[in-house]
Structures are given as structure tokens and as C-alpha cells.
Figure (tube, rainbow, N blue to C red):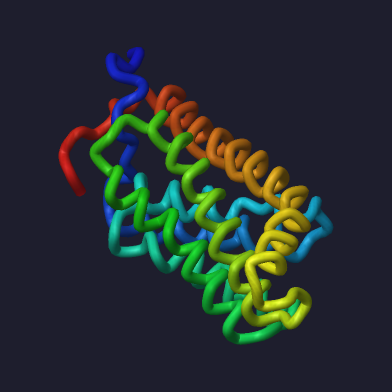
Length: 186
């Protein structure tokens, strides 16, 4: 039976399914961060957004935080102030996803772009402020942002591709199982 509203809100019914999906997302994020990959091309922000829109408030914030803590335990931690900014910037997509929970899932794409921009602005401001690599003046801040532009390109492309992969996969699974999108808030 085809879905009448294939672009409506997609939800994962039941707490056990939510926990399972959160564990899968955390595992995906950890693997993607520890295995060789292009710089700044990881699914963490996209999975946080996905968790917020699909899993809901109970586990949405857990996904990026657990993924980052576990992968950082394997990769090593750097300056705690930088980690705090990175963790906050990667938790924001989950918050945006929670706020957009009742919207149609294509709304995830502008939210992914917004998340990428906010991550770029916040983390590079922290690099400028805490790393000692740039003079703490306007010229140093500008130099920091210009130097980070190639990383922003990878972040944006990665966030959009991972967002498409995650939401598209769930939509395909729903179609294959013949289930309808749920309209009621979880």
C-alpha cells in the first residue's frame, strides 16, 4: 500500500525502537569518526538532526553526545574548551530536530545547512579564541574563518549527504514495510 503522505513526519514508534535506533546512530557516528574519512565529513550532525526529528526528546541529545564521547575516548581529547564548543554545536541539530518534529521531513535539509553554518561559526570562533594560532583581533578572526573555509565545504556536503541517507533510508524502510507515516506526536 503506497504512502499517501510520503513526506510527512517520520516517527519511530515505541521506546525499544527508539533505543535501538539511537544505538545504531551512535555506532554509525563512532565508526565514521574513527575510520579514515575526508576531513570534516562525518554523520554526527545529521544523525543528531535525525534523532531529534524521528526518535524524539528522550534520546535525541544522547546520540551526538554519546557518539562524541565514545569516539573521542578512542581518538583522544584536545583542549576541553574546544570540546565543549564542539559538543554544544553538534547537539544543536538535535534541538533543531526536536523543534521541527511536526514538520515534513524535507525540512531537514535547510536545518542541516543551518547546523553546518552554526557549527562552522562556533567552532572556528573557539579555534581563534583558544588555540593561540591567530592574533586575538578582528584580522586574526577573519584569517581563522578564511583558513577554515575548505573544512566548511566538507562539513556542508557531508551534513547534506548524511541527512539524505538517513531520512531516505527510513522513508524506504517505511515504504518497504508498507507502514504509514505517523502524524500523532510521540
